Image (cartoon, rainbow over all chains, first blue to last red; front, side):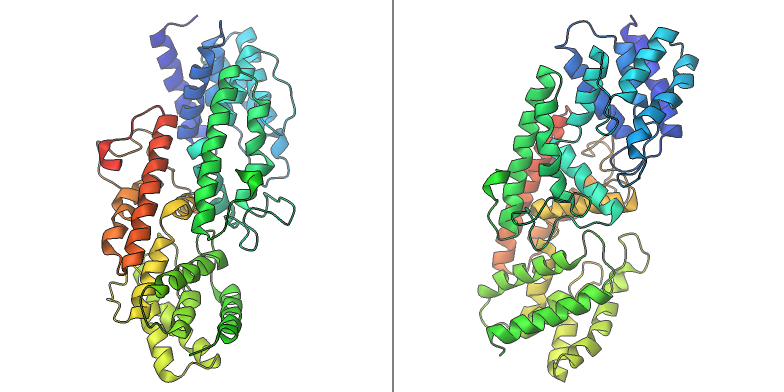
Length: 223
Length: 223
């Protein structure tokens, strides 16, 4: 196991690689990687024995290949990121086993890849990344995506989709009931699930105030 | 004065013009115009005699020329919008006095133009537009701008700018203390000021939860 100083040095080196090579946008930038690593450490504390070197490598390289929300081959991004991570990890002294374990965590982290995480580190990374889609930071990232794609914040005719199907490609706010509000059920660690529930509750409170600003009442399904 | 039906017909006609001719982004779209008109009606109710025809024309055409946040000639946008509005208003039956009054409200609505609003309608439009920069909708629009420009949501080294100057061109969150938290002082109607204060208080509550998600304490200057 690495001591604290070695872990800090490795973090700096990984962060530098990400800064140089990751395609950044407002929701996928170094701050996102820092938050995921911070979440991952928090989750690791209640998961018993965790290999922090693998978790750290996976946290900082998991978006090394990051495709836009509307890219057709987006489901391949995490597999491509895992492939791109291997030479970086070897360069930083990861042995074959550690490279493979880090690659698995990276490949299995995303929604769209559909790969089951098979290790503790992979489960923690997935939860840590998903937590960053929730809460106040999740709200900020939702609307940053909306601005980047030039799509509306919400449907002006029916902001909370009471009488139409959800369509998060068309309206940013639809992403919450369509995907984000369901994340707590799918969390793989107990601590991750508890934090996810709290963050979703805070998003629902935001939605209630937003509704009042729009002069409408938040539908029961949102509260 | 127009009756309710005539006002609705005029609104539909103005909205169609905006839909066709306004350069839209996630924060400046038909939903923004609808919110500004809704705010304006709310403010008008406590301002005595208000010419709703002028207010309606100004609400739907105030962003007819809308330049990006980082455009060098942005301070001219409201004057250009007023000029572009004139033929539209004449076409819709506004007389010379009404055209001029609507143009004044449009020209004087923006921060950057530095024109004093001289009529009740101009003061209401300015407050109605500024209210839409605050509260939950203001939060959504802040981060949509961030995504559109590809700038970070906040400074990862110092999210709440405790030890550096504010720079809202570099970090979206800096826009709140730099501009938005000051809006209540500059509101021109009593109702507008009261709503603005409440919306700023809600933004500060959002910031406190965001800080806790980032594992830091919100500085006193933000709470």
